[in-house]
Each structure stands twice: as C-alpha cells, then as structure tokens.
Amino acid sequence: MKKFIPYLLIPISLVLAAMRIPGWIIFIASALAIVPLSAAIGMATEDLSKRVGALLGGWLNAAFGNVTELIIIIIAIRAGEMDVVRASLIGSIMGNILLVLGLSMFLGGLRYKIQTFNEDAAGIHTVMLILAMTAIIIPSLFAFESYHSFNMMLMAPHLMGMSEWISGILLLLYIGSLIFSMKTHQNLFETNDDNNVAPPIWSSRKAAAILLLSTILVAVVSDNLVRSIQPMVAALGLSKIFIGIIVIPIIGNATEHAVAVSMAMRDKMDISLNICISSSTQMAFLIAPVAVFLSIPLRHPFPFVFDGFELIAVGFSALIAAFIARDGKCNWLEGAQLIVVYAILAVAFYFLPQ
Image (cartoon, rainbow, N blue to C red; front, top):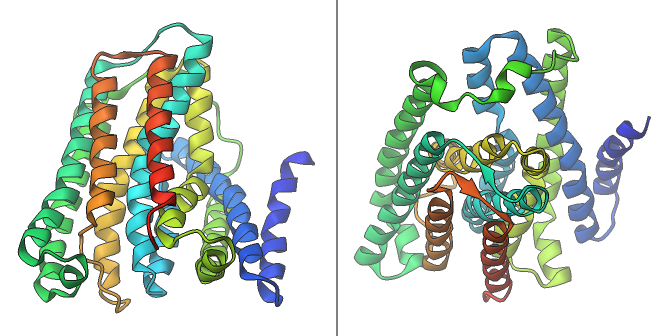
C-alpha cells in the first residue's frame, strides 16, 4: 500500500492546478507529481524491453529514456519559455555528469575503497560527450562572432537553418551510436549483471497501458508546471535560468538519478556510469535536435545556440567528467570533486541576474 502513496501527488496536483491558489504552490505540487510518473514510465519501459529482446529493448529504452524532459521542453517551447528550454537542456547534461555521477562515485566510494568500470565503454561514452559539447559550442561561437550580441543572434534568420543542419547531423550520429552499442559492438557494453536480469513484473498489455497513461499524465502535469514558472519566479525570486538549469532537470530525472546512485552503492559502477553519461549524450544528440525541429511547427523557433555562461558550465562539466573517467576507476574524493563543481555552478546560476 505504501508504494502507491507517491501517486496520490498526481490527483492532488491536478486539483490544486484547477483552484485559484498561488502559482508557486502549483509549481511545487506539479514538480512532485512528475517524479512518480517518471518512475512509472521507467518501470513500464524496462518491462517492455525485457519482452521484446535485447536489440529492440535497447532502442525502446533509448526512445523513452528522457521522455519526461522532452515533454517538459516541448510544452515550454509551445509556451514561448525559450530561456527555460535552453537552461533545461544544459542543466540535464550538467546535472547527470556532475551531480548524479558525483553522488554515485561519492556514496559508492564510501562503501568500496576503489570502484572500477569498463575503460573501453567509458572512453566511448566520454568521446561522445565531448562531441556533444563541440556540437553545442561551435554554433554558439559562430553566432557570437557574427553578431556579438545574444539577443541579436537569436533574431538572425539564417541561424535557424544552421541549427536544422546541425540537428540532423547529430541525429544521424546518435542513430549510429545506437547501432554500435546495441548491435555491432554490443560486447563492449555488456556487464556481469546482464545475465541476471529479473523477469518482467507486468504483462505486455499492462506495461504498454501504464506507459501510455503515464506519458499523457506527464504532459498534463508538465503543462501546469510550465504555466506556474512565472508565479514561482515572482514569489520566490528565482530566475527562469536557475529553474531550468537546476530544478527541472532534477525533477525530470529523479528516478534515473536514484537508480544510478543505488547501482554505484552495490558496486555496479559500469551501470551507474552508463546511466549518467548516456543520459547526457541523449540530451545533446536526441532531445536537443528534436526540440529544434519541433520548435518550427510550434512557431517558437529554437536556434541551437546558448549564451556564454551556459557554454562555459557545460564545457567544463564534460571535460572534468572525461578526466575522471579516463583511468577506469574512481573513489569517493573524485565524486566529491564533481559535486563541488556542480554546487559552485548552481550558486553562480542562482546569483545570475534575471
């Protein structure tokens, strides 16, 4: 019975959204309601992936791995909250490779003096991460060099065309990386845990129904969340950038974060590292390009460019994670270092002028 208590947050958030109460309360209620919905999507996807085979299951996990963040981003684009869209993309990447990986290494390191992971897989993941950062940074540097002003840059018509080309290239590379990891070089990513997978707990029909219903509810609750961002900003003095960078990524990825940390605490650092870095690369190679293409019919064009401080934050995050993952082992101090970097960036974004 206790396991159903978190799901009570969903109807509570919907009732509160229909009432005339302060918007910041609706924001908090909606944020809390998204967490169990995200967990339900994850469990349903995992169950279905066990039934359809390793290859198709891997594609299914890839497709729904960041569906909560994608829904929030699409709704934010429709609402014209472009600052939130940019910030949430950067925040998801930054949070996964600093906060979540840091917590995993720190808490896992407190139990086990040295934890090891597959150097080959880690190397492939970190190269993809650096490529993702390159794809994010280069268009922005080009735009800054041409226009010297972030606001002027966003209004430049040809930047949208450049963003579409870059997004298409990223999507092709992402598909290639899935073929590499799930078909041609699957052995590089196998772990000892792969042969001890628990059987599915739901039937295919039940898992599909839960996945569909949870996705619809995430869309409804996310709409309330995005609508209440401005009241949240006015009531608590938080900037939209801070909400997008820190708050929304933690909400959307809460369940995945918990899994990554729990795997590390069970000395399964390979799985933890894969969750953290794969989620970050998926945000850059899949979610960001999809956001660019969907922004066109939604009539709020989203050029693939970010401001200077966002670029510095995500660039340093990727480099630090790459250095730490290079030797195939980690300890609690390296985890603490990642957490400290995230905390410093969070404080900086908190004091960033609105």
